[in-house]
Image (cartoon, rainbow, N blue to C red; front, side, top):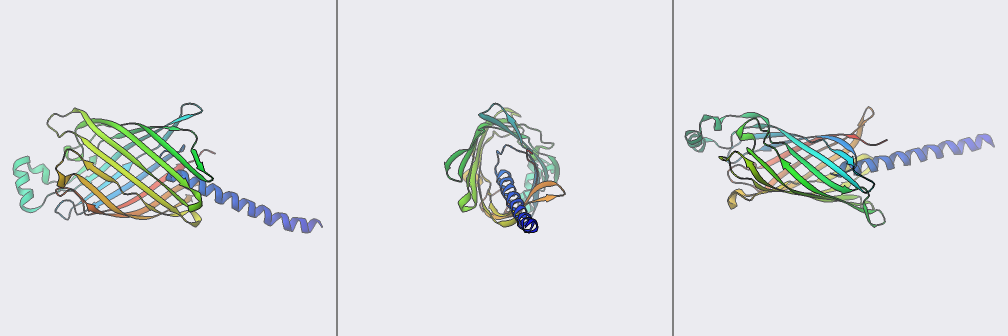
Length: 289
């Protein structure tokens, strides 16, 4: 009798552990997909842009964007997301256009540059509990100020302006359909800085959609749509389309979220816009135990 009980208890315990582990992985994956999750994370997002302007040149941007949640009270959290870009920039011009630009602006415009871009701290006030819309369907939102600080180490790598504006983000989880979706929207206006540089009035709109698969895998699309309201119509919009794949897994005991995706720019600025982008991201996750 005792042996039979042991034979039953061991598989049951193993099954319960497997179910518990799977649920924990799903919860961690959902938190990793949430831009304003109540979890410390350290994303490194590398974006390689190919075919700048009318050239075959390349730009590489490594965004270091840690996320720090701060508990304000039982009802509200403050999510802090500073973004610091490290940029390698080749010229946007070539041939006769580059020669003319060098005569007007100097030889530096034809050189490649490497350094820091402008620091963008984002602050989102978010309710500590999600809004339950239906069974296993929940909504999280956040809103707050966003700033841009002229930390660029070269004029060609930043705006030279102090800017600020509102930010808003939503995150919708629909577990019966195995999807998470939402968007991030920010508009920045310059209010100080180098008077000889162009004013900043720029929109960033980033919708995202993830379809969750087994074993931590997921399909993802997250195009970054931008509009420079100060530019002429043919240099105003960037509208990409594409997607990729990602997975939650562990390196040792450290949970990480890795993904790779590619985007083609359906609309791009004529003078500076890239043809397409390859994006790779590695995020170190620090869930509350």
